Length: 356
Image (cartoon, rainbow, N blue to C red; front, side, top):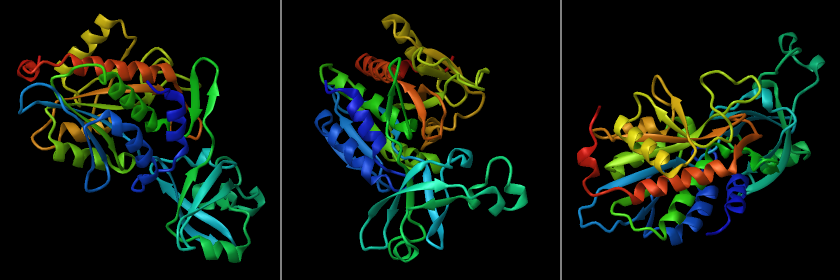
């Protein structure tokens, strides 16, 4: 099995903002090609990989859905060679000043990646209400270092700006970097597919790297409707305990992936996955969601006539910042958990899938 960490770093280093996922999609496609029988794209760009099961046709199918898009910035204006920006997805302006970024400039006829930094003007140059505390995004500037005439030639309003921090290995099997939400889950699904190379499974498996989750779960809505799986598992990240984040809405860091319970999720799938993890002694945590989860699980659950859905998540610190953190072993655990579940699905499993 190829090493996970270099692949994960490649995923984190690739741009792929919501609606513009092609750079990271190509990396995933290359890794998945030998692991599935068919690869295709949805009409809006989500990546679909099919591993056929061995049961007689027509076979039931399970969809494992991760999203590959990232949050980032978009150029809204150019002022004396400096770029004004707005957010693509849920960007917190407080973390932006001082961040290295890449401007994907399109004014030169192709796409030219320009290194840049996000700068915060001096307090005396800001409106009085912005002179203390966090500065609103509308007052921040992206500086490429180029002269104004060069910026005007190369950059266009609407060009994308992505984080440029490099992934950083920390102590304790921890990896830090931007876009671990949700490239970590793409990596977990890849681990699952690699595990299945040596396992027989009755059901068809749809591996999905969806687009535009961060701006409306769009890829999951459309892929679930197109593929019509019998059941589904969404894989995402969740809030891990850390500084200022220790209440019931957070989970322990590095103690295993989570299994979510709530109205967005099917109780029989929850029970089956929980019993399997207990049997295999895979560390996991229970997470509670009193309403819909805000993940692809919601989009899948309500697609077509409704699809029984479960949610597995990887605990992550500092979500939607350039220094998100995960424990790599939790990614591997999630991948193995899903592979074991798929390998154990019997042709009549869905007939026993009842509300309790």
